[in-house]
Image (cartoon, rainbow, N blue to C red; front, side, top):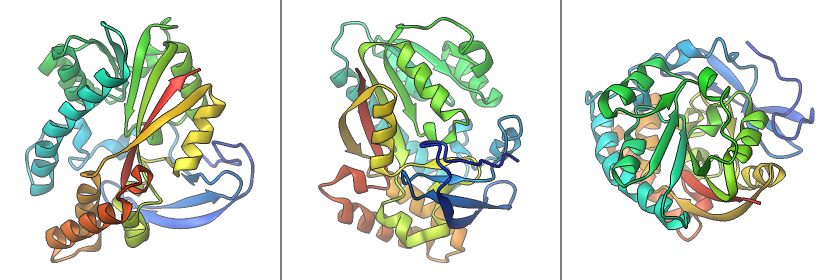
Length: 297
């Protein structure tokens, strides 16, 4: 385990205990979340090292790394994903003002997003550290997918006009270094798309330590809206806009109900997901998950 002395965002030692959460997917261990009183980041500490985190992803419950249809939650996730993929492609097309979009998807999982981007004429590149997910992406779609160790050794300066991290940044150990690399990989005025769980949402407040999007220890950070905006600004990006991810409240609530052992899990999850979205209406930065669009300065 790694013990962090300072906050991974502001590098100050002004953090306090926030929650203790259980890893429901793999180890059943408990992990401590700290809240930085200086910048507002919530983060896991202590946490598995980058060399030791791998086994915590080896679970059939980790949907982005497999192609299973087993179980109601998996089936609903994949059904919604088809719709969401089309919306994501339209978003990329709307924010990239060029005839040839060169997109890098960091943490591309099984490659479904990159595949639909490729089918829409984009030049696609992916990075995926998980061997099983990476091989699925290559075998199913013939995509150009790299391991971390290979990708970051190459010279990609100014190669891409869009870089996406769909629910990925919260997993990255070397947070500061990775964002600096993202900056160098982009052309001037290139765009970064970040999708992140939102610890200021209603469902996060309701489920507390059993909120499934804490997902310890795989999720290393939990970014409040002002925290991610300040971090990205410090890394050379300007904020463009934020967008809601309304389906996430239902999916996260279903998993959270499962954590609670609820006998009315599906009904409760639907009600809580609906209520969370209703309370967030008009403010995309109050939804269970939020998309942030940034442009390189």
